[in-house]
Amino acid sequence: MRIALLALNFAEYASRLAVALATKHEVLLVLRASNAERELTDELRTLVEESVTVRHLEPRRRRDPRVLGTSFSINRIVRDFAPDVLHIHEEHPVLAGWTVVSLRKTIPLVFTVHDPVSHAGGPPKDGLRWKILMWFRRRANRLIVHGPRMLAEIEALDGRLAGRVDVVPHGILGRAAVDGNPSGNEQGTLLFFGRMEPYKGLRYFLDAGDILRSRGHEFRLIVAGTGTDLTRHRERIAASDWVELIDRYVSATEVADLFRRSAAVVLPYTDATQSGVAAIAFANSRPVIASAVGDLPDVVIPGRTGLLVAPCDARALADAMEKILVDRALRDSLAAGAGQYARERLSWPRIAELTQETYRRAIESRSDPVRWPANQRRGTGSY
Image (cartoon, helix red, strand yellow):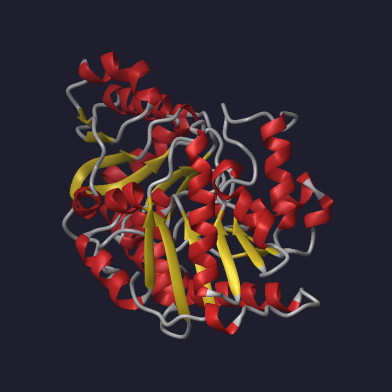
């Protein structure tokens, strides 16, 4: 099978999927150059270049009329490769819309939908942008989501999508090999990592820290990343000598070391669909303390890979963090379980197997087979 993968965001995810698919198929991978530069380690970049046909683009800003050139470039690259299926990690219609409209009658389309519904602060479901997004989703032959709750959400949004959505778990991320080794952590250290948006619940992480201090515990909270919500809490963080702030983008080469420092990773989200941060934690054999929102309960399994708490409940979050801090046997058991779960359920060979089944369903759903002109079938290798 010849597979074209378009991911102008999610460069690491798409790259790891592409490498796994390339063991059995010919794969074209189209990435945003700046996103790939941020997310890919040198090791992963080399592996991608050795395994698949890779092409980098740098789109203009969406309001720049010259962004149309990006759409034409994507179409040319895809047509030259002449794939049997085109897999798009859902992108803004301005960037990928023309590709969907112009190629959907030529080739089966698969969309990965990372967020079926908007997070707090996203576009309203009765707005024009949301209606356009749903129109494009209906153009796909198959859609992929990362958990059963996401499946229910997207089918509830539009009954016409029922029966056309597959669940494929979120594969592990990060450069660390999953070896089940829970050692190397700073036992009193807990990590809040990622882009700081209001729905990530930084407030509750800090509130839980205050509660733990009032109980007399010694610990360190690491807050690592950038984003709009950090501004609201910067003064509070500066006044807390038990909080370590890493206020910058954390490079791909630094991420594993940061996670390895931590006894557990905390995701106090107020709403969510799934989490790439949890995938990084599991790759590094680190348990996750998370709010029971979205599909997080599907991977954060109490007593096995982490602990779950009610959203927006700082006291419940503090109780769970306290368990990790004081119970070494629990901490080590959850760390080992997180690594085992990653190896068995979230490995990229397994994710690739599930994804290629979606491709086959997309191809079989079309009554007309793909017929590219013979002169468009080109050999693989880097452009």
